[in-house]
Length: 144
Image (cartoon, rainbow, N blue to C red; front, side, top):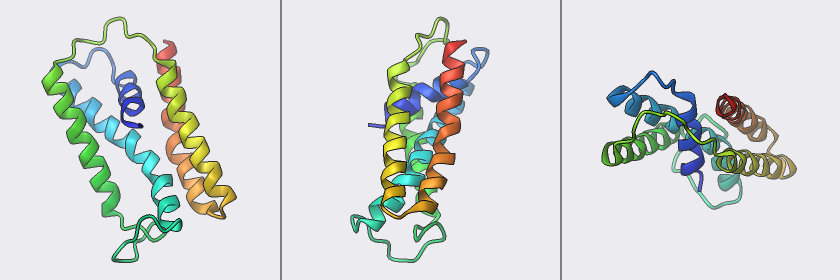
């Protein structure tokens, strides 16, 4: 559900002058960061709810840091494969997908508020500060 909004935001942030394999790598890398920002709030919520259990006590609210590396690498690989298979053209005349960025923002905000109301103030703040820059940059870049 967050893959497409993450891809939209990433595509908006890569300058149009970056093309070819450099664009593929850049968009996949940024998209991985955008997607992983959501995981910053989602994993503590799921762990606190007993949905996910870690074998070791990790450094980030009980979550091992390699979990975030795994999220980034999985998303990066997915996006890179998508770009390689679809061979997207240069971003001339991108249509601004407000709905995708709004979905990312609303989902993030709902998760942050749920965490905050559930007594997870630290993860809520971390999630807010991890996701908000991507929303703002994606929105502003889309308006250009």
